Image 1: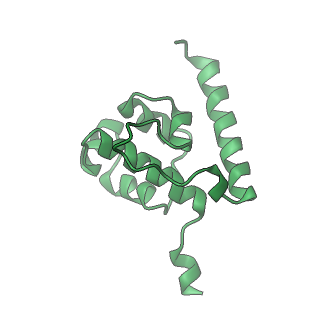
Image 2: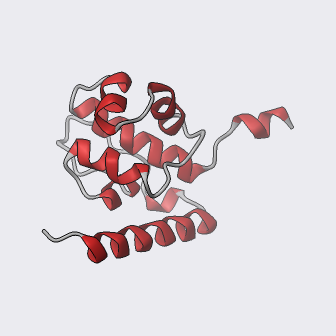
Amino acid sequence: MAKHRERALPILQEVGKTIRTYRKAQSLTQRQLAERAGMTPEAICRIETGVVLPDLSTLPRIAEVFGVAPAALLREPDLPPSVTPLRGWSALTDHDRAIVRDVVARLLAAEGGGRSG
């Protein structure tokens, strides 16, 4: 049973990997990202390692640091070929895909409701 607790859900791992990929592509440390996003380095570490999923209030702050839409953090990053691509959509379970669809829909609704541009 301990083995099960140590493994993060695939969706958590994927979002964390995407955030880590963007962070490394911009040559930021976890501390620098945390400072710019108004978070703690520990929170960034927990997100990147798949322990937690960023909530709807923190995801936009992280995305703003990277200069991308929050929904971009929920899919593979569009980065130069020199950055190793992450596992694709097909690697997620149906349940995890449903979670991603729900979060993306909420983010898109939030972006359309209060922001222009």
